[in-house]
Image (tube, rainbow, N blue to C red; front, side):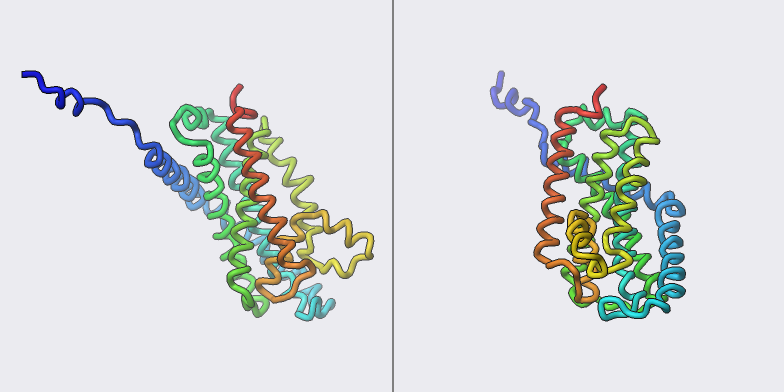
Amino acid sequence: MFDGNTLLDKTPKKPDLIQINLVGLRTIVTKEVRRVLRIWVQTIVPPAITMTLYFIIFGSLIGSRIGEMGGVPYTTFIAPGLIMMSVITNSFGNVVSSFFSGKLQLNLEELLVSPLDFTTIIIGYVAGGVARGLAVAALVTIVASFFTDLSVVYPLVTISVVILTAIVFSLAGLLNAIFANSFDDISIIPTFVLAPLTYLGGVFFSITLLSPFWQKVALANPILYMVNAFRYGMLGSSDIPLSTAFIIILVAVFGLFGLALFLLRRGIGIRT
């Protein structure tokens, strides 16, 4: 005897896109974190060694001659800047190398034809960059504690700034990887844009040392706001109003995310 309910029971269910995207997100994040941990000698150790040299040269040797800056010992003053420098370079470098490798090896085609939303793909790669940035930040903070006494005045500000900064430069690394056509292309931005902006972003000095004209020029550097906001969270002092710094950082986060999402949806730099 024919039962209509039997036919209804055999009707395939629609896939749960939310569940699919959650599984996809977890997979991408797991892959990125495992990649960082698998080659930890290349991803975690070098920044710690580099920052140790910075503390020895600029902190111990030169800092003893400079004395105080911003009302604190020079070594203490540069510590937040050096931590932020490590976050910026490693968050950026992790995403640009990972995403471009996937594009070069045609692994991204599998993501593009999958039911994953482009937002999920972006968040997954960015999470990997943030994880590496925070891991390196923690290690550099431990290194800094051997050279100066560090205390966090405003923990919430400190944590929020370092996470948002890692997100900003993870997104920037993703954009670089999208437009890059060779391994040479992924080194142009870090060398000719990121490095100058970082060194001129108040890592080693207060902008109050500059003339009024160059102070205004320095305000065009977005890294200046991130470094000073992080320094405010750790030391309680900043050359930039905290509210202004957070506005700049949040605008960068949403602006870069929107641009990355637009490029992926249009297939720019991905589809040939």
